[in-house]
Length: 409
Image 1 (cartoon, rainbow, N blue to C red):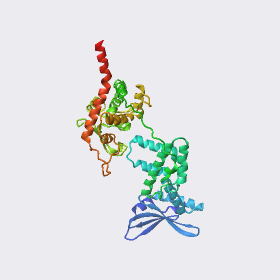
Image 2 (image 1 turned 120 degrees about the vertical axis):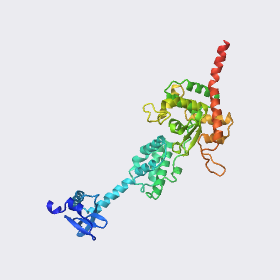
Image 3 (image 1 turned 135 degrees about the vertical axis):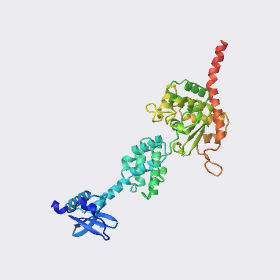
Image 4 (image 1 turned 135 degrees about the horizontal axis):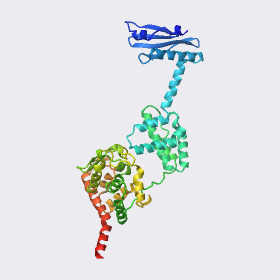
């Protein structure tokens, strides 16, 4: 039986060429090789339910003689079990297509297409993995209904995480917008669900010191901090630059122009997804030049404690503030932005739009257009230098008083 099935040889198959007209070479058991102007193709003829049928097994060189014979044997096994090989293949393809278009697979594809900073990317992945995928992740994205999604989101709400529920809803809504654009879904079940969720939770503001005397105490504590050079450098730099913690921790030497006293942060690292220019006051330049001989050959200005191949961890600066005796209810690195915003406005009297630009908030002109990154650059440079000098004055105030007291004694 084996010999009757295998009439061809690999040498004969490889030597077969088109001779001006199409022809077939039979291998037996329904398997033939069709040679035509477009190449060499495997065909399998069989009978099912009393009718003769034919299917393709692919073409050379992708499908060799040995592979074609394996497919023939698989098809014959299916026929022996009363299964049509063509119908079986269609069912397999449909199952594979359904797997590729599950909510989880499309969300993964959408996330991969974003230019987010790694920390935010991991937060989005984590929310979906914990709260959405267990119930809906393996479902075909086109079959999920608004009531089903709402039920999942309400479970998140009942766990006491109202903001998490809203963020999950936003991630799913954006996933569906991506799916609709790619032709993978026809409707967005997340659209309008915010009306059915609980009232928006009050925003949590980052703790910030706005009293000048207390701020001076914090600055003196930072100056006396005895941690590792990257942590100490980032802690000293934070008050001067008005950056978000992630933007500060992930600062790269390639983004710095120390001669031009400028830091250029690419859009992919920014919350508003726009390039951001940060003028560097003299105090910031001095801190960076202290670090440059040690870490300037690497990528990160503030490398991690375990590996210079990664930036400083999010917890490093938090732990540093705790070592200085400050709790999260008193001050945070992010809260230093609120500190600057208040003092620049209420004490130093700078224009609010200068401040908002430097905080990298969304600021638009009279026609509603977003300003570009160079807007008010010279004014912002002057503002940051004056603010840095003001901070140094707050920091040194107590030291001057002590020196006067000692000289009087």
